[in-house]
Amino acid sequence: MVSKKQKRINWILVAVLLVLSVFFLFPVIWMLANSFKPDAAITADMNSVAAFIPPAPDGSFFDNYIEIITNTSFLRYMGNTLLYAAILIVLGIIVNGLAGYALAKINFPFREQWLLIIMMLLIVPTETVITIHFLIIAKAGLLNTILGYILPSIVNPFNIFLFRQVFVSLPDDVYEAAQLDFCGPVKYFFTMVLPMSKTVVATVSVFTFLNVWNDYLWPSLVFTSSDLLTAQIGLNSITSNENTTMGQTLAVITLVTIPVIIIYSLFSKQIVEGVTSTGSKEG
Image (tube, rainbow, N blue to C red; front, side):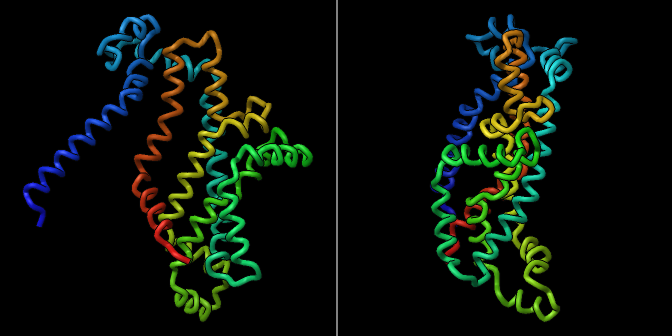
């Protein structure tokens, strides 16, 4: 049983963590509160506690958001990004999952060497290969296309490694039993392996979404048409416009932040479990 002294220590730790969490949330609270204010009110409240308090709801409460939604293409940029993320999540799970399964369960020549190469790719900065990706996509005539944006992003060494670490621990006798029912490796992967690995699938999905949502450099190289731009490029375009007010800037930043907060709120447990489980595997 936990002693009274230990309980007191636990309560003190909880209190300290709560205080620290509120402290780190101050910028978010300030952003959200001021996104509903006109610039004059933001400036007037800057050096007071009122900077963290939203204004009383009235007819102009949502003016900054209405201005962004009605007079810019930001909702379309967000929709584009959600579409790209959905496509990459599905393709990434299939491609990286199959690669991870092959590295974990299928004996083929130079399997360990391939695993070593994938692990070495984890330390290669994205900026060192993005020029090569751009040249290949340009030569293929895929610039300013969704396919050109998606193709270089499907294969992810980190996701392959995550899948491989989880699949190593799957029991072989399940596959042997499936073979008796004439279940091949591909069918077994989709009908048995993925359903048994929901945690790592959720982890990879969240990481893929966040990578797409926060990506600025690659889409800015591939896309020139405003119809295909992503949320981060739209954010930069709107905030760098001299006609955009501070309140509108905070409103558009809030809109960009909301999906990330929702994803972390819904899947934080799966992210922790997925990363923890993959870190504990051997092989």
